[in-house]
Image (cartoon, rainbow, N blue to C red; front, side, top):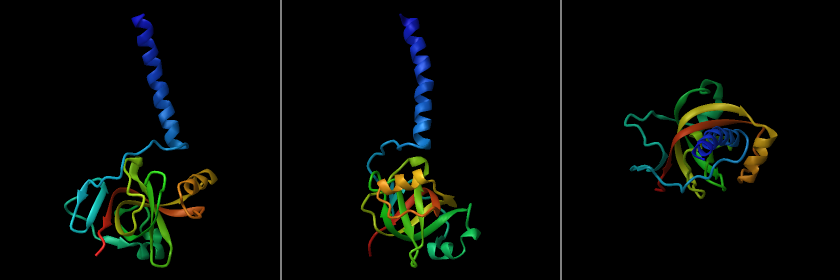
Amino acid sequence: MRLVLALSLLLAVPALAHDEAAHHKGGAMPKLGPATPVQTTADGAVYGARLPENLPASVSLDEVVAKPDAQLGKHGAWSGRITQVCQMQGCWLVLSANDGRFARVNMHDHAFAVPKDARGEAVVYGTLSQKALSAKEIEHLKKDGAGAPAASELQIDATSVLIRSAP
């Protein structure tokens, strides 16, 4: 009986791992806990990883959208205005430039969330990229509350998000 139980467990673990990997690739993401700041600074609340002591200067999203190729693939700090947040879990947000162009910010490895009602100025720490979205990804974003996602968009894989306190 113990042998049967042990063999069952050995076979079940890889199957569960496979299901979890498939879940992350194309299906719904696992439920996140509440959006809780990991740090509070004089500038505001930080979500994700704590900020390093030597912060890089942030680059305005206005500069990024004007010449995105110069910034693609770079890890840095990006500043703009939060205009949308995932209404399902807070697992992405839209950081907008003054002219309305934007970058979608995804929380690295879906490891943290920001408040669903977050608005105002923010600084996002992560890596900037350009991504073509599939029809399935666009549909998923719409279900999360995204307003008309583009077929291709700037994205930031964020490790930390600083939501500035209102003055």
